[in-house]
Length: 44
Image (cartoon, rainbow, N blue to C red; front, top):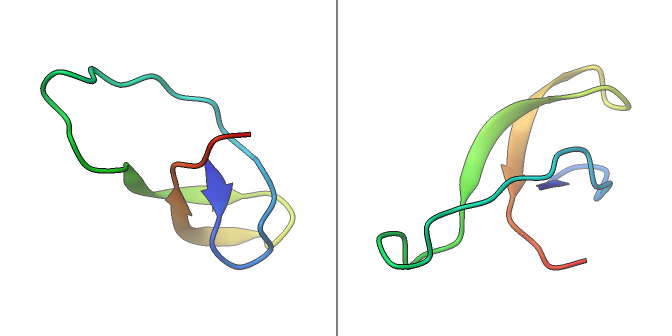
């Protein structure tokens, strides 16, 4: 998962590709921004 503000990779997740067709978007804590920000699924 990649932070929407600072664009750093903070989390690694897996998803069920059969049931979830869209990209994941979760509100998670970013330790560099020091606040809760939306994190988007990206390929590294």
